[in-house]
Image (cartoon, rainbow, N blue to C red; front, side):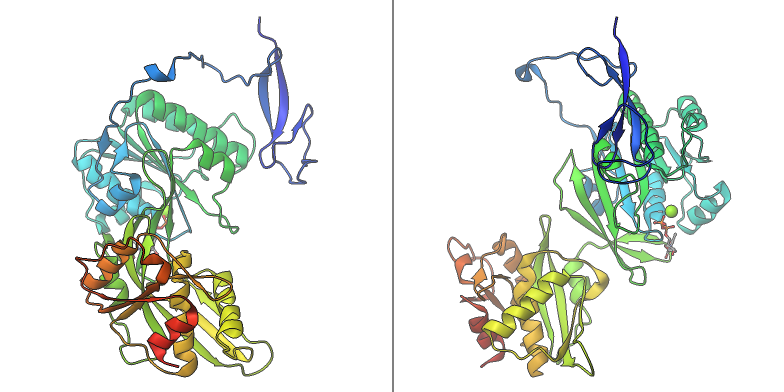
Length: 454
Ligand code: TYD
Ligand code: MG
């Protein structure tokens, strides 16, 4: 007979104790200890109803995953080519960014394709959802709505309806009646997600879970949720800006770092098929402090405009503001400019911005940041048909960046004539079919000389 014992495990740091405590002695967090049941003999965790079999790795057969298209290209690509049967997909993002809007559009597209879709909302009433759906022209026959937060009742509805696709909006509002803690707490989120996971896997229901992002920028019950699901997507963007980026940060069925771009219109989210065009239209053509950089997000090149404004500090400490780009990277570039290019920036405010409200985190943007700052500092504009790309090291040297051909091709497609790139990128570069003049430079001083003169 299997003898069971229970222990309490901290959900934040993994500290184990035989007794429940309010505060974890390991990490001093409150209410993070959760009871887990173990087999006393070999200390294996017991999951009710589960049994395990093993086989040789050689004997495991791979079947091509059956994927369903959402009919939204940008989303399909981020998912790795469509929705995989029985997969669990977490969609995270700030409140009001458009998660519900995206998922109701997905629900509509899928239900038109004869998939039975159940949309569970714990946040809005059926009426509110209807109002939104009308605005988005959603009126499919196969789309079912329920406004419910009790997991027990939701379970019954799922058994009764047996949908192909399930959408839970949001995980923080749903609670399991057997657990006493409040909805949204670590143990609730964990229990409900594990229930949904069992259902998804055993009945082949592809499940979308909406998760709100906390102030610290992670989804509540972070480790628990992200580990349990197959795919984690983040929906990001500035609320006052129309553009939204959907980013895969984990994907068991595709590559991560892939992004999809959307625009929020008054009739819902619209795909942006050519982000480069959108992001650089309306660019000022005769101003100092702007340059275009071919960034790469996932596998896709994207031209973005970096703007800089350098002005003398009125009083006290100079201000440094970075929007859409890593703040620490900007500080680093300012330091490199002071030390290696002799720019006097100590009494200057510096504002750096990527237009369009998107976030780019590549170090390949470095040379763009440098060029924009120097251009604004000298109040001298950079040729509008020139792009620049390269990572900058601490000694001011330029380092090679990946996927250079893709970047150059995208730039030449959009009419750019000259590219300033790191010298170390020249080796093996295939540019026969790309109509763009290449200027290879070794450090920031050479780069500045080419773009702005001495
Ligand atoms: P919503 O999907 O409710 O955000 P979330 O579920 O992530 O909290 O989106 C809300 C915002 O989107 C709201 O401010 C209004 C705006 N919106 C539009 O601009 N157009 C539309 O067609 C819809 C449905 C919403
Ligand atoms: Mg919502």
